[in-house]
Image (cartoon, rainbow, N blue to C red; front, side, top):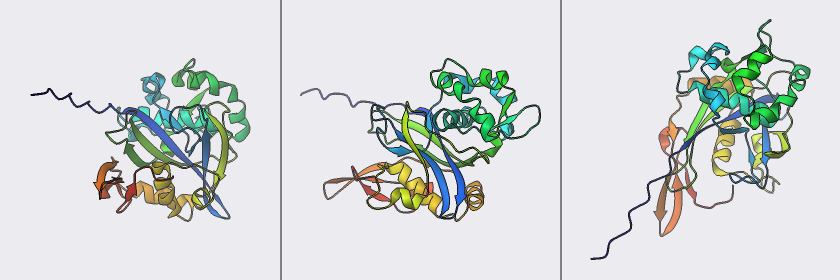
Length: 266
């Protein structure tokens, strides 16, 4: 009897966050998206929402006392919320934070004045709590609405457990890509991003969440709809139909009946 090789255990998902920063326009809701650098090993060249892995500083105990609305997040989820805001600032230059002295959201110019902190935060040379304390800021986690939670399928070697958050971009903060992890950026409607013949490459989870966003005519409507919807984990399941590989989304995740050919564009 020949010994069979032991089945390889699925990779443990890494905790991560991403954020849909939105604003209203004449064409409908626009969302800020960045194009990943082609040398990045995850979602290379794709148009994505700002986001990334949780950094050690996101779990700093001081974050709770330096945040507005932290009571709405337990100790397990608060680092995800902090990560979403930090990543948004690093990748887009948009910062969901208030001045501790006045309680007012940062203006566009005040955020630009903090731009030199983006790279040190990205390189983990500066922790999020230290950044907030040094600049007299409070993290506006109360501006975040839970939008979705996706876990990478079990057969993928690099897996993530990702919280998606939705937020209205602060007035006057226009955003700009960092030039390192992201090489282009745009405010774009879901319809334009997904249009046939679009120049953008959009991966499956991003496309599904753009479809969801497209259902709302305004940012306010999107925020209300998302706040009222219970977030269920979306763990895509591989299936074979007539010998061909597919990915199926769990219906309880709220995207409807979705069966996607594996390897399909976008």
